[in-house]
Amino acid sequence: MSENYKETVSPHEMEELWEQDLLQRYPTENTKAKADYRNYESPARDTVREFYRMNHTYQTYEFVRQKEQEFLAFNRREMSLWDAVDYLNTLIDDSDPDIDLDQTQHLLQTAEAIRADGHPDWFVLTGFLHDLGKVLCLFGEPQWAVVGDTFPVGCAYSDKIVYPEFFTANPDYYDERYNSTYGVYAPNCGLRNVHLSWGHDEYLYHIMKDYLPEPALYMIRYHSFYAQHREEAYNHLMDDHDRELFKWVRAFNPYDLYSKSPSPPDVKKLRPYYEDLAAKYLPDTLRF
Image 1 (cartoon, rainbow, N blue to C red):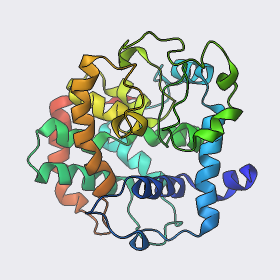
Image 2: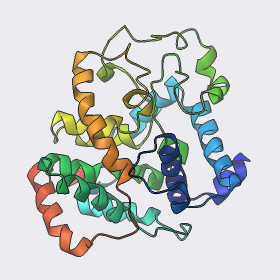
Image 3: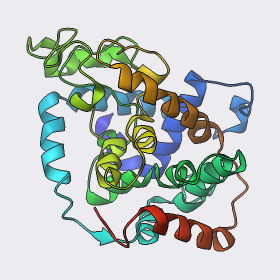
Image 4: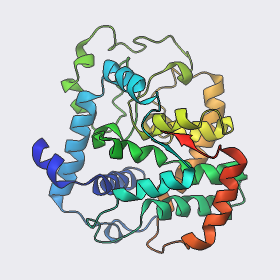
């Protein structure tokens, strides 16, 4: 199954499957009916399970620390923000039968929904930026190390994480250093001291951490941490500062999860606004 999965599921299709799975786990009254989203047959549901089997098997504490060392050197490319968005657009392929939106359009839909609700401009920019870390796919990272729900490593895996049964294949599950409630951490040590599974959230946080307000950085870093911002499974690692800032993570989540629409935004019309907004907060070029 895993070899077939690697060969036949594109990064864009895997992202769509993950988002559909999130919508099924966390529905809202305002979402479209399930049948109105991409209609995948049962083998595709098996693909989501296989994705999480690999994710939960290989996302060990040592794997995460190695990826931090490898990618946080930021020695792969230097790009302007818009060049990075254009680069990310190369993830798009012809596998999507229902919605043919490139990454620019998806990011703009999120940002424009935030803007329409009158939020601060840094919040709007965060909506536009939040998925840029997915360039990891273009640097050769496997999909299970780019997208998917995130969770702490170095301590016991919560049964609130999606498909928790797959953690029994992870060597950390049996390692006494990592399989207790606190593992390598201390009670209420603060999430800044906790290593989460490797992916686009953590990667982009480190790229942006010197440029954006702290609420924006929390949104970027923890927007896929559903085990906490939806299930509250790791309150024992959070401190009061985390609890206060997670209000922003929860405020951001509906825009990320529920703003997708088949109607594309006018990229040409909106681009000058976002270029000016990026110039207010970010340097001319970013290191990836």
